[in-house]
Length: 580
Image 1 (cartoon, rainbow, N blue to C red):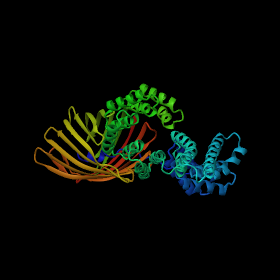
Image 2: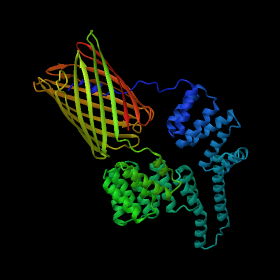
Image 3: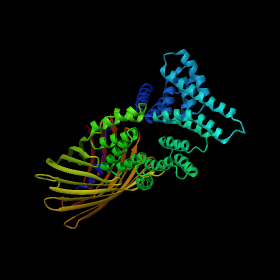
Image 4: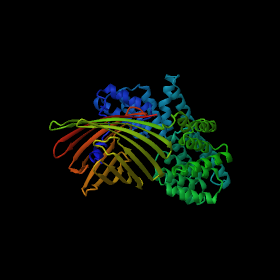
């Protein structure tokens, strides 16, 4: 095996200028990202625009809405307030600030901002809808206060409980509606008000745990579920909430252990069956998951979550027609559900992938150029199995070799996958006549606090040339940091041939996710190559970029500099990946 390809083969990306140069371009891209709900990208672009033109009220307003999308109320408040300082009559800024006040639990302040806006702009439907919600919250607040004021100290405990229930019920109904619509911050505000009226209500504590979890505040969610269980150790929804929390944190083994305990206590409970099916999906037991979802839906036809799960598992195994039917049935039960609507709006999963790439190597010392091009097609046959084929054409010093390769990848479990590959080169001049390889990857450590996961990997390959046989073994470790935005890997490479020649080396690499669409990588390798019976010292520095033009198209580019004892090699790579 040619070990320089271990480094050069890592270098696929397109050197594109992903950074707009003008305020107008940055603003336009930021607005587009916000409209596509890529709020983090939108915030980054709009802040760059503000660094070039700080007093731009339009940019400040768009930044405020992007921060609202991220749930950063303080940052959104600052942006809208700064916009109003520049343009005091800016209606969108007032509307945005009203949303901030309402989500912060200040409905009176929100009304003071949005009420005049509705009067000035009677056709503004968003402002009118917000005013309606604000007024309903204020009315509920007044009812709760009136109920508390009217309560007499000497009345019976049963009467006090009834009054509290009467005050809490409308809050919970509205909070439930907001939660279903995906408005978790607003729902949380109402749940907290309800809890202040009924502090030992375990249903409210569980609901707060769920909305905190939906907003990825997992530690806070855990505290709410624990508080409910401290009041009532047998509180079913709190126990189920703990299981959901384990799923959200990626601890599938713990989730499985807990749901088995829940089902042992309440066999046949449809909510528990749905969560059990979700865990089965994570365990890649799709048949078991579909059976559990279907059983839950049959036992409780009004269980929208069971129907959504049924759609998810059918979509995962490629039955898009049946999946959409399940989603549509779920939407009839919950017509305001943003989650279900998003599933129906999503494109079917892509099963095919086409990869095209080419490398040009410039050799020093007047040795000319090498080329190495390839085209590959892969197909996801099942959610766990991918089949692929590739054609490679390479030139060296006026000679050309064409190699055909077949590959299979399979995930045996959420934390373990493996692959196998075979390749052949008819009438080979310099590539291996026959190659066979295999490898495996184990997710050894899960992500905790933004650090991880950590993968342990092993690759092995056998190459048969005209005059010799080479065997290469390469164990390597890969770790992620900062919520998987930074990945670092270290690979040891050991190669030897049947004539006793041995080569050892290493490859170091870093991968950085700059935005959801832009990724960079770079690294260095010192991995001697065994070519036929010759040991060649090689040192390579490499880097590149990949940029997602769309969800279906990725452009790739790379550069590598390889130092050999007799010449220097500069490698330029271009490519693209198309999913369909």
